[in-house]
Image (tube, rainbow, N blue to C red; front, side, top):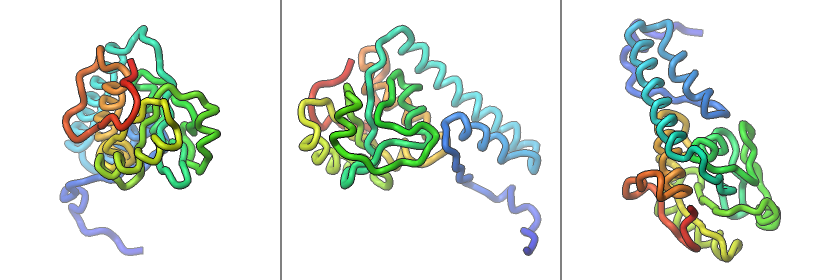
Amino acid sequence: MRALPGGWLRRLSHLALGALALAANFSLAQDSASPALDEGTDRAARLVAGLRARLDQIAARVAGRSRPRVAVIEWTDPPYTAGHWIPDLVVAAGGKPVAARPGGQSVPTTWASIAASEPDVLIVAPCGYHLAGAAEQAQAVAAAMPGLPIWAIDADGIIVRPGPRLIDGAEAIASILHPDAVPAAPPGRVARVAGVQAS
């Protein structure tokens, strides 16, 4: 194994994280900067504190409200249930994840199985797709699950890739689930594809 050149960590502009739960992404962000860089450790601590403060703001806005049952679909043909940290995002946004595998891998399922979980709302978040692609795939979900509110979300931008952007995802999901308590997501983040808005 060869050694890395001196100062390599100081030249990093991006840090890719990989965790199975939302909280683990925070730990990775903070732990990755230490012990190599003291200033990196301080910066990571400030970043994590800011992200946690944003999650606390969501929690305060949705406190005491009913928690809609939310199925996040990570792929549509065949349908895949949400895994990894995505169910944690739903909980942070004031929802109850169904047809999900918190902290586990996403797995293929059937539309009948998703329907049996009795979701109140479906969010289509296909891995590798931004909002336009997610909205296109959501049309298939609307055909398979008629009568339910179906939303598309910028999966690749704010849901399926680990890192600080996941808090943007929690805020966007909260805006879908609790539109009268949470500010609307910025343009390009979410789109209603079918059904009525959850509240």
